[in-house]
Amino acid sequence: MSKTDQRGQRVPPARALASRPQWQALQRHAATMRKRHLRDLFAADADRGTHFALEAAGWHFDYAKQRVDAETLKLLLRLAEACALRERIAAMFRGDRINTSEDRAVLHVALRMPRKRRLIVDGVDVVAQVHAVLERMAAFCDRVRAGAWRGHTGVAIRHVVNIGIGGSDLGPVMAHEALRQHCDRSLDLRFVSNVDGSDFVEAVRDLDPARTLFIVCSKTFTTQETLANAHAARRWCLDALGDERAIARHFVAVSTNRGEVEKFGIDPANMFGFWDWVGGRYSMDSAIGLSTMLAIGPARFRELLAGFHAMDEHFRKAPLARNLPVLHGLIGIWNTNFLGIASHAVLPYAQYLKRFPAYLQQLLMESNGKRVTHAGKPVGVDTCPIVWGEPGTNGQHSFYQLIHQGTRAVACDFIGFCESTSALTAQHDLLIANMLAQGEALAFGKTAAQVRAEGVPAALVPHKVFDGNRPSNTMLARRLDPAALGALVALYEHSTLVQGAIWDIDSFDQWGVELGKVLTRRIADELSAAKTPRLTHDSSTNALIRRYRRLRGNS
Ligand code: G6Q
Image (cartoon, rainbow, N blue to C red; front, side, top):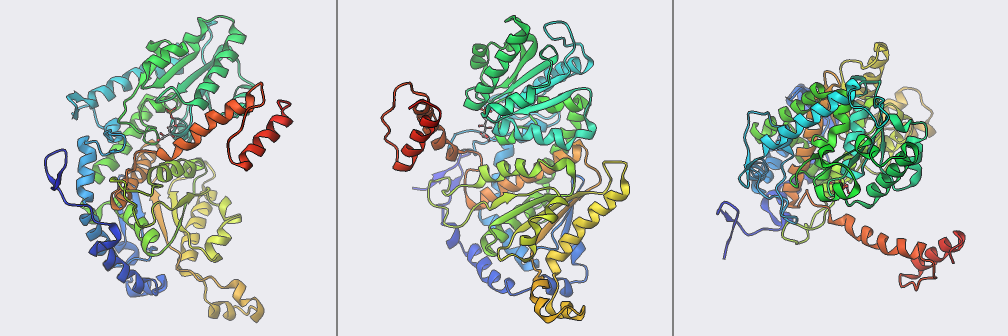
């Protein structure tokens, strides 16, 4: 009997990805493309730099230095059609429960829909809910920024400490760094995430408790690391201010769990909510972005949302062949599955984007680092590559050696801006010159003949040869402002969905983080038990626990 989807449409029986004719056509094509060098592709098309480029939401996307030709794109788009990518995109925007393993809608796009839009999910207009919270956030941020929100002793707040981890940390940290030059510098923002107490201690060591506000960010409000740090903050605050009533002036919460927030002692009036259809790693533009709004102000925060929304609209409406996140995602599939490139470096040529690779590691790897399909069958092909990166030009003086001459290929995303974010504009030209030079060097390399022609001694020639043919994307925007950042994040969010649709995986769950959590609870008890515990782990873990207890004086 054939299955039907939520709207009663027949769902064709799932076919293993690698046995689809579109996949096999790409494999045959890849056998040819692997023999072609980017030098040949550029020689064959004098205008490749404009033919393989696209504009959307303020971003110029150059994929000319990818090892693709028109045929590659045609075949990738056929695969996308066969994998019902259009339907997956429409389903997300409709609010269907596309996070099937958790039975949830995936509606981060609703977080940035303009006020006049309506999106009814389970009988509720979620856009109206979003704007109600945005208004409360804006009123709160205005008061704190203006010094009208006073601490328990009556002085204005000047330090804000965001306590959260994973999706409740990486986005806010990244955005704060990225938008530093748009921040109110009289407000000092800090972030605590690690359960290592040193993270908290270092964050508050020079802070005045009377002027410090804690934002406890946790969707579930049950996360062990966040609660440990929040309790440490509570004690730190009470030790200094000596009055339980201080908590209401120095703690606010961002969560979906009102009950737990109240249990912790935070006044629900000081809680900013969101919804189960916002995944942690897709939440930096929800109330989880409260620290971002405090730093840049409500008006700039709305510009950030508008940037996200501009990319959302492009993603929703543009034909697949001219759709930036679609092409970005499909090129990633090509590199991973057909050219066998298992590593993806994100290399922003912008110091303010220094936390962007860490942010993307979670977004991409937690979303698509999966091995089974929606139906629980093995995907059968490789999924998410290893994502990593550092800002240019620092990386050039360390790991770029491997990218240029190592034996493993790395697909690179270069990200840059035309306007300088500092008054040192000549240095900005140098920065971008470096970025463009790296893309060029990776693509074209340097042949032995070229090296010899420079008079290099024969013994050194092999060392100085660059094979080239190493693929990269280049993303360029006018300036690093909230709108450009929003559009950039949305680009990667949607590229992630595109890849998940091809692999037929649930990009919105994260079961892979559960096992470690469960084992931690058990081991934590064993490490601190007063009486020597009976250990039933493997011999390695048992020995490590015994050694730890002995050195801690617990044995
Ligand atoms: C993200 C993950 C995860 C989550 C953290 C924090 O998509 O779900 O990184 O954000 O575990 O969870 P809480 O916000 O519930 O504390």
